Image 1 (cartoon, rainbow, N blue to C red):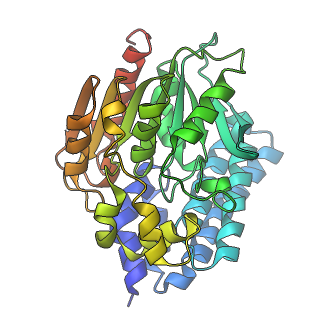
Image 2: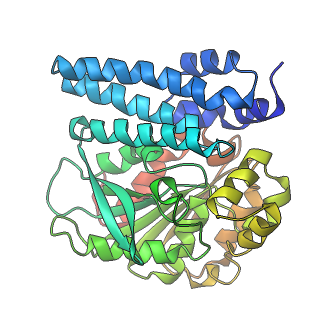
Length: 356
C-alpha cells in the first residue's frame, strides 16, 4: 500500500509531469513500484540515469540532436526526483545537480540552443537559461519565473511556443528557486529579481531591452504580476495559476507543498513559514499593474482556487484578459493545448510581433 505522501504526489502532479516532458509509460512504471515516499527521489533518479545514458551514448556517436533530446528528458526526470524531496536535502541536492548538469549538457544541441547565464543579485548571483529564436536580430524577451517547486529547467516545454513566435526566453531561478534555493530564501517582493533580470537584459546587445515581458507559473503566477506591478520596464505579463494571497490558502495546500515552502523560505518551522507566506500577497500591488496582463487558471484547480485568478483580473489598473480553463486543474496541466499557444499568440501581439 502506498503511503499518503506518495499518493498525494501522484494525484496532484501526474498531469504536470506528462505535460512537461515525462513519458506516460515511465510515469506509470515508476510510480506503480513506489510505496514509500523515502524511495521517491532514488526511483526517479534511476529512471533519469537511463535516459542520461542514452544521451551520453548518442553524444559519443555524434548524434547531437538525439543526444540533446535524451539529455533534456533526463533533466526533467532528475528534476522531478528532487522537486519536493525536502526531507532529505543531501539526496535532493544530488538529484538537483544532476538535473542542472544534464540540462546544461543539452543546451548546445537544442533547437534553438541555450546559454547558461548569471545575473548579479544583491551581492549574489541568480542563474538563468537564455534561448533565442532562430530568426535572429534583436528579439523581444520573456522573463520566465518558475513556481515553488519548479526550476528554470522544468520550463523547457513552456518555452517552445514563445520561441516559435520570435521571442527570446530567459528562464531564471529566482530567490528560493532552483540553484538559488540553498542560499537565497523565497521573497514576497519578487520585483527585486525582476529588476535584476531586466538590468541584465539591458547589458546584452543581442536582445531588445524595450520589449521585455514577464511570465510565471503556479507560485510564479504570483511572482510575475508582483514584478510587473513595480518594475515598469515589463511591457506585458502572463500569470498562470498563481495565488492572489498565498497565506489565504496555506492551510489547505498539501503537506509536501507546505514542507517545501518551509524549506525554501529558510523558515525554522511551519508557523514561521506561514508568516513568510503572508508577505506573498497582491492586495496592495495589484492596483499598480498597468501593463497588459493575461491571466490563466483552471476552474478545477485543487491547489490555488480559480477565484484567485478572477480576483487578480478585477484588481489591476491596466488591460486584462482572463482565460479560465473550465475543465483544467492546477496550471491547466491536463489541458495545455487550451492556453499555451494562445497565451504565446497574445504576448507576441503585445510585443509587436506579426501573426504567424
